[in-house]
Length: 255
Image (cartoon, rainbow, N blue to C red; front, side):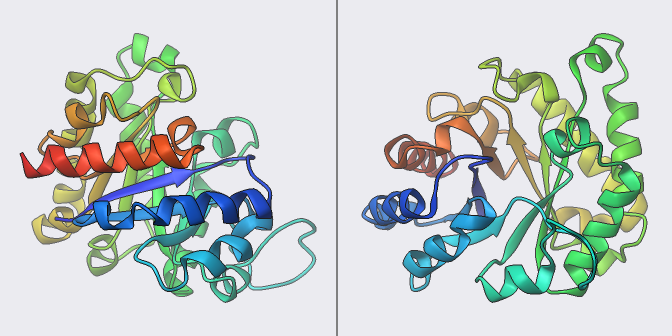
């Protein structure tokens, strides 16, 4: 299964900065063989990034969208708008959307369904807060998030899904999950998919780890049985560090 390493820039980089980053990253493109690389800029930088990435192997993603086709939804972006900008993937249900912007599981489910309906590939983010981890309810939290998000999907759709396990307490804190924690969560996710959608569909899903991941620790996650990529925040903001992380991930798989 091909690794997928995605850069989530969050609210960083203007269009000109995105263009400069992509030009620098593509100088290292020959080093990315065997890894699917994805850049997710802010909406305002999508077109600039798309212009540079158009003829490359690096894919373009968005950080969010609204599930309606069009209408009176001030400030929102539709799937059709993203596709015209060259977007292939879209991040859905990131913990910052859930906990800072108040997005509920029902909206996440609508977005997942709408992504498939409009030909976008969803990256579903799930993960527990630190208090939930301390209470020992991580699996209960993941079960609820998965069940709600995927309730409208058929097994054939699930097969092409990307799921990012991002423990909320590890995002932007510098405190990554242990390999044991990540392995346990990824194994639970696979088992849930296997039970509800069948082994073939579960085996097609790529599970990413996210949360303070960098070149120095990516190998410990990529080497785990059910993890096939990473959703990268801070370490993706510089082309050099992101390129190092991609190369480290590729080497970890090859070894």
